[in-house]
Length: 192
Image (cartoon, rainbow, N blue to C red; front, side, top):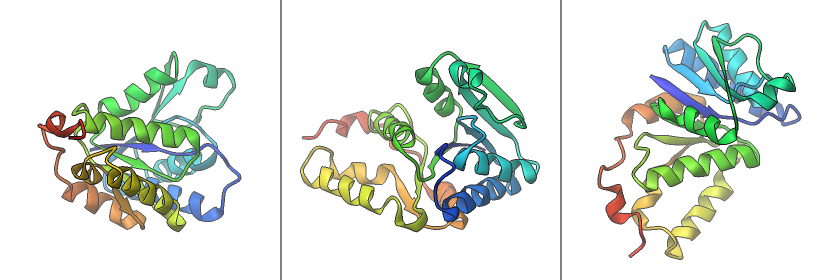
């Protein structure tokens, strides 16, 4: 199984976020899951990769060339793939993934997460999407998405497109117990 992980590059976040990222990397590697992520060496990206690599895991980074030119790439990855731009990076991250896990992050992480959710809504991505809710980070987003549904910008069925988990230990069991998204997703993509 290959897991796409969205993670922040900021190194100046609370230690609990770094610990969760490292623990996630370790847990995925221990279960033989490959990781594909943004390729960075700093912040939660670096903690994730370092955790997985320390346990002998496969870690593939997808990095835009301009970031490589700035030396933002992680030097110890199993493989670092350079792409032309952010759009190609997002596509490659999802292309062969069996699930998505979003660690806490800023606008880049949220943008990637919302693209995955949008593709799932449109029946273009069918795999589990999990938000690792470290320190309640994603609780306000969950409340907002419930409002989006209540206001009929999305259908009630769309609330099942993602799951929040509070602990790293819940990630793989939740992925394994989440069924593929319905093949008829386009039938209810539009709010009726």
